[in-house]
Length: 227
Image (cartoon, rainbow, N blue to C red; front, side):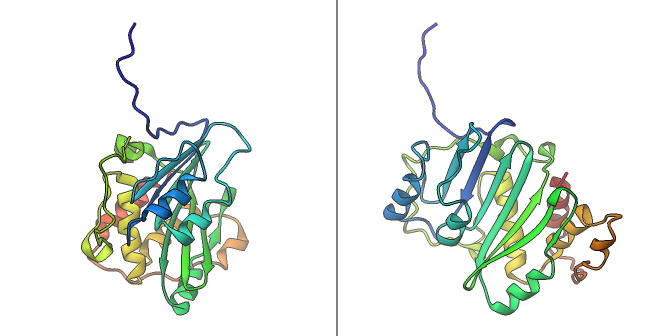
């Protein structure tokens, strides 16, 4: 057998810890990409995305993944032995951060919502399980950075930025809603993991968001992804 070519990429499995990060509001410059690449010999960041994968327990992103969302990226998902972390970051007011905190809760197996604040930047963290049957196979698609150069491209939520990775794209759409003050997605997480016989959780029910006709499809798809 003769090997014609080898293609490197990112392909998580259920016995590893894997990450995918996406920069939505602005692409990373060369210095920023170099800083991200220095975290792992296998990291191959483009101006928008980077993936990390670790096959051995005890190995993880140096400095943790939170710092990458504070400095460079706007959405992320992490798969760790069938346990998932979805994260959405954006700059906002202290008043909105206080509103988001009302949706923070910890359900069974610590599934739920965490709110992390760094100055005026908030990181909404959703600990969950994911139904992969609701996501196209390209949730861990391969990608190359040889021809990608978007550093001058000004793309953000208002411009309708979309990723070719279905899960990242869904998180981008949820992010747009959160920025606009629409918290139905967080309430959906509560509906999935917060309903419990645990009496302690009964006093932590988040406020019911205002029902809207717009964006219902996003909420439905997001709720379907949660297992």
